[in-house]
Length: 461
Image 1 (spheres, rainbow, N blue to C red):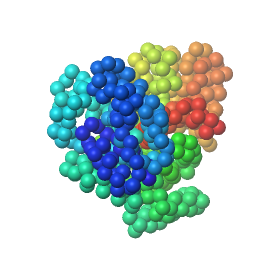
Image 2: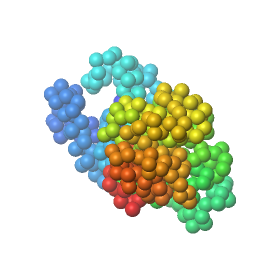
Image 3: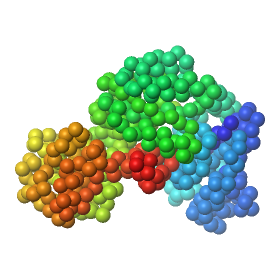
């Protein structure tokens, strides 16, 4: 057994970890203790002498040097903020996040000798650090366990049971597989999922992810994410959930104890009603494309806007036009506004553009206004040009040298708009680039690992 306990100080990682190691008859390793041993000083002394930065460097070396064999590993509270640490910790191991409420944490650590990380009072520091670290904790975890009302012994027994039995019941798994088999997914994919589910008896902590959409048969996410899971030695399997009813997909996800979903058309808005927690970006955009389940709670994120923002970073402050007024246009507007651009939404149905512009705080108009605006940046957030469509939302005469044209459509790789923009001397960004970058951000939210962009591009071919 290889298991890593992560979480904030005071959640019981060390005490529960020692007991769990005894129950599993494997060695116990505490990264803080390893750092102290290597430095010949306590954590408090290291902080005083080298500051937090010095401690983090020592912690990173200790994590990179951890033995690969069986063991229980307890980490410091801030270790998983660094994706390099998570990459080392995750390889071949199951990650368990221990959580506790702020009052419980304060009670447990108030008389400890560890140095304060801020100048706040203890409760305020706990709250601030938990808020700052919560997404990193959730991303790095395979499972979440609340230790607030549990003894260390109860936590250790609960983790052992989870490692031995997993989080699903055989009857529920059977029902879920029947639902998937009748959803229109190709037979080989159904058989592969069934084989993975059947193998849970011998590998109960395999985590399942999938793309939720209708249609989803064209999605390249299963191949991409499975390659990434394999490379980083994450014990996970990625499939697709193809159904016109989101509630049925969520029922299947519950029965299979799914860890995460990539949410696509037509569910990005609807999914918001089913989530326990929604990040600020999803709330502002009004759509969510990434869901993580942990400890009986669901968490929604949006990485689409990151896939649009990052390629356009050098164009900060430009005058921009977005074609469309749907969910993709909302993500695009949010991304461009974050880059201090002057944004105008243009749509054939002006009323839709007006509503979205009013919500996000930008300008709006008709497609006919394009020539008057003379934008420096153009983002196509309509489906025009997506296979088998051969049209372009703009003509070559609309385009001018020096414009940056970003087409969010990624099938085909070179859309009619991209072809026309390249011919007009524009700087072009194909939709594939958005997919690559949002997938990178999504993989990090699923695993805590920062996969290189070059690796993702190479996998996609």
